[in-house]
Image 1: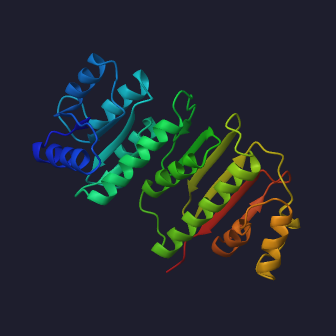
Image 2: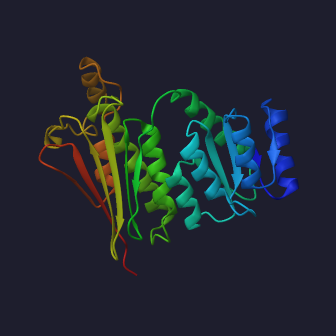
Length: 278
């Protein structure tokens, strides 16, 4: 279901989705019409693609209704402003992702495909995600064990205000969250969706601080081998232990982030990135 008060946008998005990927597409002009349409058909739709600013009922209000009444319907937000606080609110309310205007066809198709794949993968399961954002610059997500939520955490943090970091530093943070988030999912909780991961972020005047926590048994990071000393031997050793090739996550993160500190148990890691002084 395409929801936008601009007719040409409804037409373009609908034509792309129906002609390129043969999706069955319907259109409506505002959030109020959309929620009425969803209720009348008992939420038969798999996905709602909605504009943010619309008369009668805006995109955020529509997503809140969908999340409350039928959270199995995935939703994507269209916005002209990446750092709009309303986008953050939509993600908090359960939106899968956002697409910036002007709309890239490639990004549209990729995001829609991922949203539908995720919906199919989580069909019949309760998401049980909690999001806290009680003060500006701070956010926390508690979610089932799945890398999907690490990606969602990255989206939240990338939208939180004007972070005084270079593009290179931002990419370093993205890689670090990827690596240690994957470790929490794969090795900490052993991909057990009955366990939770907790992802927190806070921005101070001089630094960014991230916390990644799992419910696993933990480990001693001091016992990790330096994979750069003998990469081939490192890979062979991991294969002997029945582990995937890799194991560079902690090593890479320590190279990219200013401070990497684990708790005594080894199931909580704190990452700190300082802002560079002029």
